[in-house]
Length: 535
Image 1 (tube, rainbow, N blue to C red):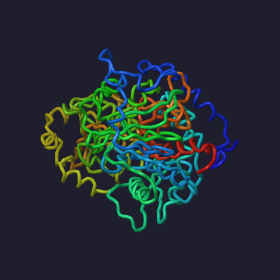
Image 2: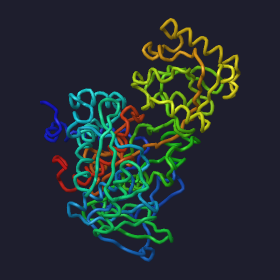
Image 3: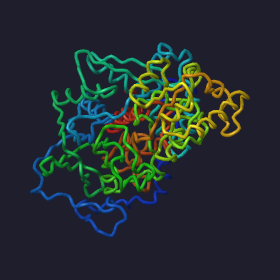
Image 4: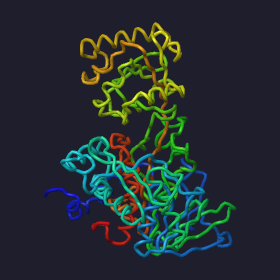
């Protein structure tokens, strides 16, 4: 069957999503057992005899601690990348929605929104349209196969229609596409008459939150969700939230709860459990409160947590502008030692730098630094102008000198050490073969360090996010350890797992945000019973 934008909805394999994840769920070493049908949340009690603080569920607050009760169809928990679209799509389909948001406003931490399967791809730079064979194979390969392939497929094919539904249903919305990595698009947004402090898809989320409050929706800001409510059958029927004054609110739902609370990067105990390498790294996203709330609340109602180690989305932006991150130039640690093949995919470059002293490195290049830019298909969108270079020098993350020795002194490396490494590397450039780390000759030929001025660019590793999410099927329904759906509970964005495996494939730029927007809206479709239809 020819894979097109629309006919995927009838494709085989969607029903296999839950079964595929059930196999993963059965391997989870740390997840808690599902509660029995007869068990209610009030019967769960905490104990000190646990390995992790979230292993034991707290008691539900007493009735006299509840300051207000809300009744609705759907409760959306978290207003980041996934939550606003879910709230808007639900409300536009006639659902009464209450949203709980931990912060004082919505916040989208991602810089872009990567999507596939858009209409008119030829118009924006893909003259042959989408090559779904290559896209799907690439995503499966990049995630080491430790993922739910049906979920990946759903997010790929639904992502373009999701953002285009938002464009078509937000008055004055302007959506433009930017071709990324040759096989998918990033989105650029503006809304006529709407000014926002947010970037990218955050502009849309900001508008949605304002619209929702003016059109019958309820948003409780600075009210983080603390627990899920289950009935005697084991179905999730609501959420407990805590207000700034310490009192609690109760949200009762008839249709379901969608968890969109983000990742675990602010919770050091969870980092110790799922990705200890991230402990102590600076954070790229200026957010607070990413404490793994979905993991806690999901665990307490018997949800399975992604069994593989969490993927840590590392970036090199923390030290500064980092315009040339991942460009395959000679890279040395702070001792002046070369330590890797510089031609890796960007996510692997960040992993290699992670284990160097102080998690930092320097790229070394000469005055011809812009000549190979079009060939650097594995780098992270390097610019093609000297303004970016001079900008890094001006802000102190780039260094410029007339000699290698002077450059070494500026970056605090022994001049004789750096000169020796540069001379050896230049020898490889001349002979067209790298005998140390075997950098691809197509990159090596642009990497010579021979004609001044010479440049060094400094990078430090930092966290973008750390995903350890609840296992979901391809309808975003949360699964218990035995692979069965937990009625009434959905998760989207970084609160959900099974998407990226052990590492985020940064080569698919922006798809973390793209799958978040898509997943929130797919969760609503699942509630509506329309998940196999278009938006």
